[in-house]
Length: 253
Image (cartoon, rainbow, N blue to C red; front, side):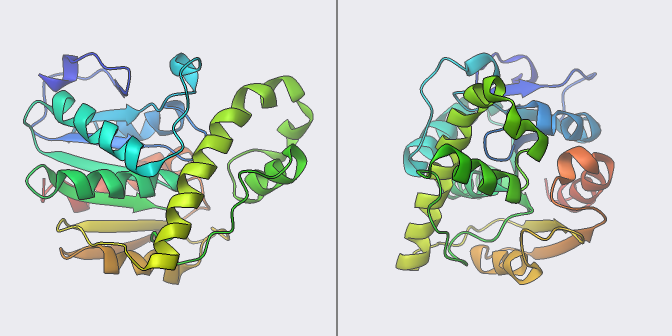
């Protein structure tokens, strides 16, 4: 079954048995599976939970990064179909991972995807994203810190920045170019799956009305859930986030 299927794209957590539904968790920009691993552990009683590992980070550090959303979403949709082995799927994305999860859901459709969950990110196309991915290192990394993707104390660690910056820039280009195009074209299309959007009450990086804007991207039931905490819900409040996802998504899945 999917739990035992080897894939460089998906990393599972150990648990007993095989669940009927598979959940895939997409981390934030520049991140690897470590940032959503505890959430997957919390959800493993209800789903076969897998973290998504994109090229250019962790064990895939030497692989070329992805910067074009359509190409990445096409690859992920194919990999995910093979990996799930016919079981229904739930997709969860945190911050920039929300846009990737949404595009994969568009490709797979309701026959495969039973629900979509997103957190801490504006609905694609609802706000104009100014491109920052091509800025010089100091300016770019200051924006990354402002967005909550990088602790400010790491800015002095040039050796570490050399490792993490390529994946960060790639993900920023991936999401900024994609969302700017959607904003200017107005071409965002709804998906016919139940959707839940979660945000932290103390998150100052995204306004609540931009979370509400996800309602325009689904023709299924929609719910917004505020949680205690700030931007980094999968790492700071994994149990609270898992409870929301489990309670909202498990009955649908």
